[in-house]
Structure formats: C-alpha cells, structure tokens
Amino acid sequence: TKHLISSADLSRAEVEDILETAASMHDLQRREVKKVPTLRGRTVINFFFEDSTRTRSSFEIAGKWMSADTINLSAKGSSTSKGESLRDTAMTVDAMAVDALVIRHNASGACQQVAQWVRCSVINAGDGTHEHPTQALLDAYTLRTRLGDLDGKHVVIVGDLTHSRVFRSNVITLKTLGARVTVVAPPTLMPSGIGAWSAADGFATSWDLDPVLDGEGEHGPVDAVMMLRVQRERMSGGYFPTAREYTVGYGLTRDRLERLVARNDDVLVLHPGPMNRGLEIAPEAADAPQSVVLDQVSAGVAVRMAVLYHLLAGDDTPAPVPPVTAT
Ligand code: CP
Image (tube, rainbow, N blue to C red; front, side, top):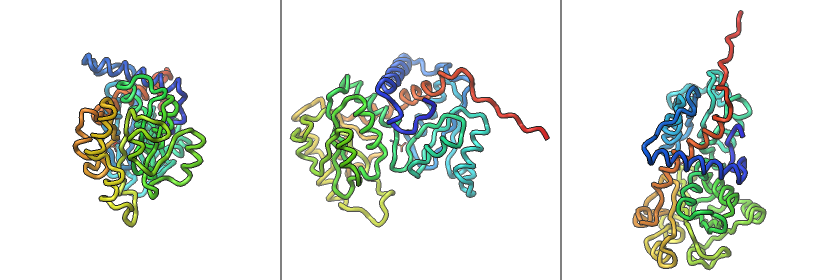
C-alpha cells in the first residue's frame, strides 16, 4: 500500500500487522526508548487545512520518534490563505522531495484527489465527513489492548453519524477485525443510505439507545461504547434535536453509565475527542474508570508510527530530489 486514504484500503492481515507494529513501538516507549532510526532521511509533511489537537501533534511526534524530518503546515500561514489551489499546493510540496503528505481537509475526498496529483505517499488525517482511518486503527488498538481479539466483541457507536468520519472508518475497521457493531443516532443525524450499507456489511442500526445499551439489541451484551462528538460546526442553521433533547436521548449520562457498569463492569467507554462534556458524554462517564479516552490518545502516537513505518520503511529509497531543468 502506498497511500492510506480509506480504512477499506487495509485487509485484515494489514490491520493486524499495523497493530502489531504499534504494539512493538508502544513497548519501546514503555521502556523509555522513544526514538528509533527507522525513517532517518525521510521527510513527512503534516498539512492541516482544518484544526486538530490530537491527530496533528501525534503525527508530528510519530514522525520525530521515527527520526523522519517532519514539517507542519496549516491553511493559515501557508499560501492557501492567498488563494493557492489544493492542486498547486500539493504539487508544490511534492516537488520538495517529501516522502509522505499527511492531510486533514474539510472536503470529503480531498485526500483521494491529492493522491492522484502527487508522487509521495498520502495519509488521510480526516477528510470532511468521509474517513479518518488512523483514528479507527488507534481505536482498534485501544480495544484490543483491553478486550483481546475483537472477533465477536460488540461495539456500540453513538452520536452524530451524519457528520462523522470517525464512525465511517471505525465501522470498516471493526468489521474487518470481526467485531459486531451497532450504530445509534437520532433519525436526523443518521446518514442517508445507511440501510443499504448496514445490510451489505452486517452491522446494526438503531434510533433507540437504551435497549441497545441494555443488551436487548440484535447484537446482545455490550463490550464497548464509543461516543461521538456532536459536530455543531458542520451544521448550518442549527440542529435538531436540541442539546437538551440530545443529552436525554443519546448522551452517555451518569445514569446510563451506571446501568452499563451494573451489567458489565469491564465495559469500555471511548470518545475520539474533542469531547462536548455535558452534551454527548457526562463528565462522570468521561472520567470513569471504564473510560479509555486518554489511552486512545496515547495509542495514537504508536499507531501513527506504525502507519508511517508500513508506508515508508519498506521502500529502500527516499524520495528523489527532482532535477532543476537546465536552460
Ligand atoms: N480525534 C481527532 O481527530 O482529534 P483532533 O481533531 O484533535 O485531531
């Protein structure tokens, strides 16, 4: 694989390979060996056209701990703010002999498009409402660390599915690893076309959270609940349900957490962040012993090191510096 654009780019063997590499990286970090020379001489550019805390910093740390030269660019502060097109920007960066371009963009499909213009590897760090494949890998890593093999495990994904690239990538990766998945959203935040997708890929959908959390849904008892952020910045003209209605119907409130834990005190609570505390997740749930939110963040570095390794280390030759045309 040269690019990582969609979680569907990875077979089960490839996902398992990346997660095993991530485990070795994590192991080294636990023994305080943070930096390895594997990507010395390689250049990775993190180009974030949309804001980020976790993904951008963990890609930067991952590149540095692999000994790659890493550079960060954002829309503000680059010539994008002067009106340079995505194509010209991508080709400009590519002409500097970079090995990988990590891109976050607010347009779904932007990474796929860039991959057609450049010679270097392209890694999708979140494109619009489409996909966020490294988030799904770090979530799978976090779940496997606690639950072991995910075959047959039941993961419930709850939230604003219409706007969630995390949900799309997670369903693909979790199904690739053999997990059972139920997705829950209010009807107004359930993506159109999900019926055909869920039928084809074998995951369950529901508008009603409580029976699912009580283990009464199609996939039975729950091993993990992933709460997703209500993405108000992607909703023009307000949103429905209201914040209060959302919390009552779909929030992981203290009461819901207590009911979940009463059924299974090993249940895991995930959230990709950033969290709207008090909206989709109560502080008592975000900070509960069952919460692995910070484990997800910490897994992000090891998993992104593993992704860079898989895309770049197999190729012995760093990107060639293009010749300057003689006149
Ligand atoms: N989960 C996630 O992508 O967070 P950031 O937007 O902070 O990168």
